[in-house]
Length: 172
Image (tube, rainbow, N blue to C red; front, side):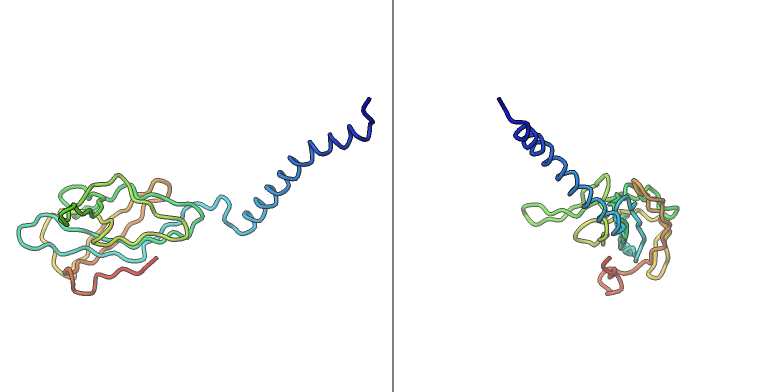
């Protein structure tokens, strides 16, 4: 026959571990909420934008954006539109072949990490565009950036000559 205190001790041991785990989880969630990170949506902003002036007979050029995200959740840039292009701008990524040849690969979206952001550049992500009319250095091009979760952002990008040093975006 089992003594009542032995049963009580066994029951308390069986119940104690889950109760302790729940208490620790609740404490962690409370700390996360107090820090202001719980449920914080993405807050994407544009820190800078430029577009390369195209040269010669090349109909395409590239636009670059520095995006900050001060929110507690990541977002995705899913589409870019512009009234100044002949075709919808296309998100793309710079790739290299095994023979060191460069090419661009279209992508469906680009991640804008929480509390970090994204800085596009000629060696990573960019936006491929076809101007309606030839753009000159100093022109301003209008874009609207569309996100999976956040509101669309209207952006003005300055046209620059590649390699002039004016096409440096600030780090988010």
